[in-house]
Image (cartoon, rainbow, N blue to C red):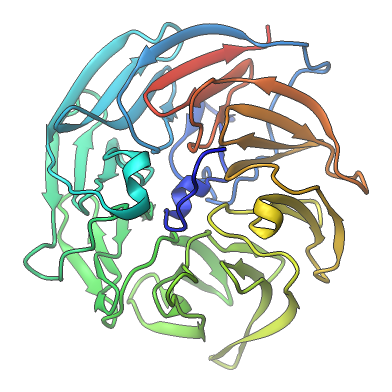
Length: 417
């Protein structure tokens, strides 16, 4: 069993990414971390009526090391990774795997601690928006490139503004793009800020109060008539007005020692589900009354302890991986926190989850893909596939006829047709 570090970004967590067909273009689209809504859930996806006994490998190509998810825009696949001394963005033909273009730059990085086994490849998943790809490199640099040819539009490294991050696993949280703004949280522990930048120019629009980042990725939501950016930073779970950067509400939930803030919180029916190492899972009720915002604990489940893996919702059930018993799948009632089932121990060091109608998909770190029935009252894998013989810390991408699987160095298209 591979040694698992206790610091890695939520992006590794990867709850996974599904690929859906846009209703108007009928072209596959998967623009960033955890999908269009950054929660690993997809309602409209065309999976097979009968799952086959095995999957066919259509193509496999070397794309470099790293845990960034592949992204898809129509007939093209985009991958951010490291090849030698460079961080590169590769653009591939979806049907053949043929390289269409590749652009990169030298990025030096010194690893340390448990990060050695995971390499110097980028840990954060990029995001596609407004005809560009926004990458967050392992050293913390944010870059915007054109999708058609990879040309660099602008970049920001923030090194003169904030203290340099510790060289262990590197920058790991995935940037957010919402309404032509890109949100990034540079810095180190107690020195940093959430920034809103103009997508076209990189110009700063607003900066939040100074606080350090974590490994958890932000997401956007509409609540109480206000568009918000929600993030779990080094100190707090916090909601900010997306337009102005004003802090609307906060819940103190700090990153201390080995209790890291890593999974991406999930929003479900007015509640935010959040949990991390050594601290169980909480459901926090978000409320607004006459302009006053509050967030209050609704339930607390201490028997289930997520480490790095972001959990997903299917119906009213919450599925994920607990660090208990050295890796244990769980299923909770999302409304009450009651445990519906727990698997045996040593299931996996890490897993990425996807939620689709009729199934929860779990990609284990050893290359095994499991399909779970979301309404079952006990743990049982309905189907299992060995999709890679290498490390699979990157979430899979689900297409209408197959999957994209990124292991440590290669990207593969597998088909069930």
